[in-house]
Length: 241
Image (cartoon, rainbow, N blue to C red; front, side, top):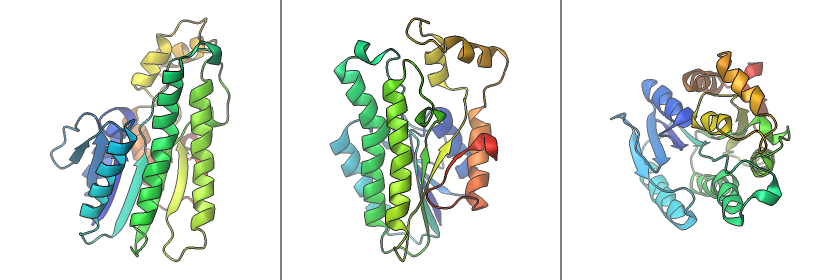
């Protein structure tokens, strides 16, 4: 059985990944506050910014999964938030903390549990982190988001380094999906230019139909995955594939 666990599987890229992998006969688990509408998907209702509840629910899920005969198992750290857009000095402590928690701390915790609890499995094991070009390109107004995604990329490389010597290693990769037509893009376009000087670029991408669809991104990630195109520790942009 091929198993994939996707965080934030009810919206945007996560929803498209759930649909794509389910269509390819994977057993799909979605961790999100709201449920996927696909009957074949097992939904775990959880607020991923609540670390205690997330840890407990994910641990219980992995214990359940490990009772099955597994051919491959994948964790996709997809859930995230842009947070309030604006210069750092104009952001509230609560908003900064919530973004770092959801974008960085939760993936670290889930990855830690995933690696620990699958140690005895001898099969394809991998973590796919949905990162962003903002990890390496600084944007005015996105200081927290850029920081959180840069941390995800370093987490990817560090896990790959740690797992390199393991007999049953967990492969870890990071993928930039490009600029995708999701709710996050709607949030960006509704921002005042005084808070985000790059606003017009993102408005133009929408007006010129230059945004990727979530389905295109999901199909690209699936193709990269099944064709085993990446080495552990790789950080890639789907626009280059």
